[in-house]
Image (cartoon, rainbow, N blue to C red; front, side, top):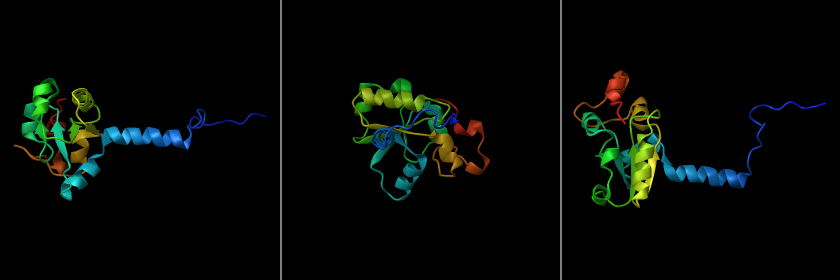
Length: 150
């Protein structure tokens, strides 16, 4: 008699030690929007927010205090002008890999960097404030409000 297995257990789980290493590695490269918001709210700004969307999208609305540095503008000279310490990079949302590309370029230039998963889209979905010419009202946000430009 054979015992049926689910798609979940068909591939065995890795050891707890390997799982720990995997998840620690992910957290070393990613920041959650909630963690970013709570740090800002509590005055624990020990990182710099970097918006890699187009400058026009940044001017329209961005996370509080975020610096605009579009992906195409990430050069050694521009990066040298950034504050020292951890950079937390974001773009508009999870369907855009702009923050991944930006984080990779910054890391290649020797910077400590994390990608904020979910981007501006999930920041707004949580109802947290934005800055800019047209701050986003989370209760009435449209795709155009999110500046869907990577």
